[in-house]
Amino acid sequence: MLVSLELHNTGDPSLGAEIQVLTEHHLGDRPGDWRVSIVGSRGSDGWEMKVWGPNGFERSYTLAGGAGEHQPLVIANVLLRLLPAKKTGNRRRKPGIERDRTKTRMCVERIIRAVVYVACLVR
Image: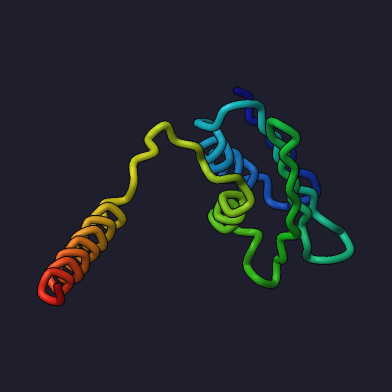
C-alpha cells in the first residue's frame, strides 16, 4: 500500500505537512495504492483536488478558499467524503433489525392463531 500526495501552488508550506499526515492517516489502512493531488490556481481561490485509487477509482473536487476549504482538517473531511465506503469482514445485522423482525414474526403468529381460533368457532 502506497499513499502519495502532490501539492502545487498552495502557498504555505507548513500546510503541506499537516495535509500529508491527515491524508496518510485516512488512506493508510485502505488496500491498494492511493494518490492525491492538490493544485492551487493563481487566477482564483480554488484548489483542484484529485484522488486516484485501486480498481480505477478516480474522484475530483474543487476546494474553495472563500468557503474555508483550504484548511487541512476540511481537506481531510472532503477526502473522506470522496472515498468509497470501507468494506468490513463483519457483515452482522444491526441489532434493531433483528428485533424488528422478531416483533413482526410474533405479530404474524398472533394473527394466524386468531384466524385459526375464529375458523374453529365458525364450524
